[in-house]
Image 1 (cartoon, rainbow, N blue to C red):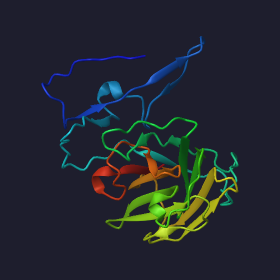
Image 2: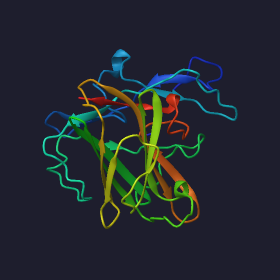
Image 3: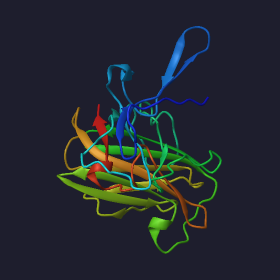
Image 4: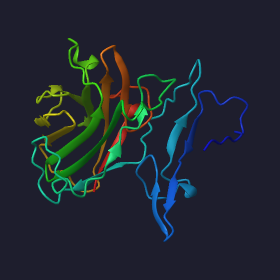
Length: 251
């Protein structure tokens, strides 16, 4: 499907506009799902739960406002996940799967790589002061030979805690974390590097309705340099900056 519509402006370059898009699926016995690119409550027609779409150009005009997209949900654990790199559905039951859906490596071309090149999703669960994370990836070429970890295939997570942004990096296949994160991070990859599981031990209880500014990315290098840096939201590949943050909502 292709479509077009006319905007009520002469030049949209640099403009930021609220929008959303959905695909409804009805197999004949009633609507079963309504799929969106972000989490929400199916109320976009009310002007709520919108994404900010930015019209780029040769001289994009960045916004000076702090913008968070609708929150990504962190569900309470049903069973206690074991950080062993083994994807057990029963351990991660209740967690909401979110996609790495935006390639922020280039501001002017945030298109997705082909599915057979890279596909990934992530989720969180929590229990008192423990935050459990899982990343599932399908990466056709795993590259970790560069001296600079930032140029290797890796997962990077950033959170705003106590007024400051902290970042943790997890190289594919490496069961240790790097960065300045203020809390202990336990990490485990599967043997085939398709499943990452990790646990962050906070020094306080993660209370319901707490909001944590954050972002998460996966960098993909097929051996000839980084080709994509995938995020769950659109942005400018500045993982640890306020205006590029998303939100985690503790449910």
